Length: 357
Image (tube, rainbow, N blue to C red; front, side):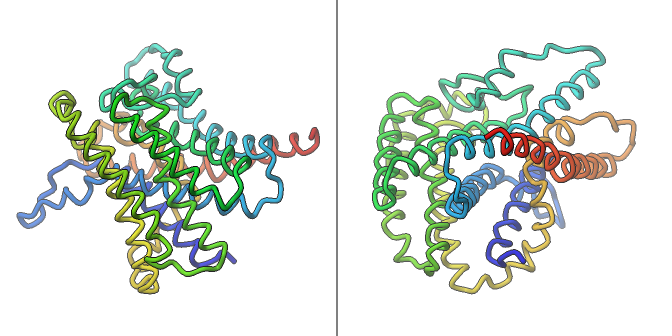
């Protein structure tokens, strides 16, 4: 039976995935009795940051539980997990694009290659981006970060002794943040964000040791994150002119980095506080979302074309019904790809790998 504490992570993962869908699907203004409740769904960026923290926890947890720590096995598992569902999304996105335009469209091979190499980000929101996200699917920006987090984690965990790991992470993320003030690009941006992902790693380390989450246990890292926040505040001051360039400054450079780290800092403390309260009310608020967790990855990467940009049901003369059906079909598609098809492909690949290794 799955540990109840780990089930909470599943519930948060499922909630974060559907929240991002609602963030992109719902209008900014939703008046209920004269009150705009639309602002409740304006924190999609924060939901992605929660994905990063959860990912750090899961990767650290599985790393310590798995006796096989070879790069070949680690790489293959991470590759299969990220790329197999992603290839389905690339294909379905292209087919939907062709259907919506009524002809074969440009497959954008250059952009596709950039995404396959995990070099994508949102060009309209950040400077010095190498590749746009494929076919305008903006959420794919986080996959490039996630992939390189995996690679950096292995490199550090394989080469650095555990007592020095936190020191190394602090050093490289601090250097990346300082360099970000002068020239922001994919390398220092990803390494800087690794400090957020590392929150999950530190929480997993505490969990695996059977220790209690306390303010004391996170105090040193909290001070370090405060240092990064100060540097990002300086970055906002230095590069404030960019807030006039980008159409959505609250989700763009140089504000969005500060926003992301601020949320990560708050989330870290919120986790400790809620744990001290014995997760009071958690199951009532988030418990149901654990059922979405097994296919939350595909929900996240598929909803742009299956919901947000969908038009194949626009003959329905009721937007609520139309988008409700888009949502249901997206959930069904995500379930089939991630719960039914993906495990079978994974099993075949891993069986072949085991036989030939």
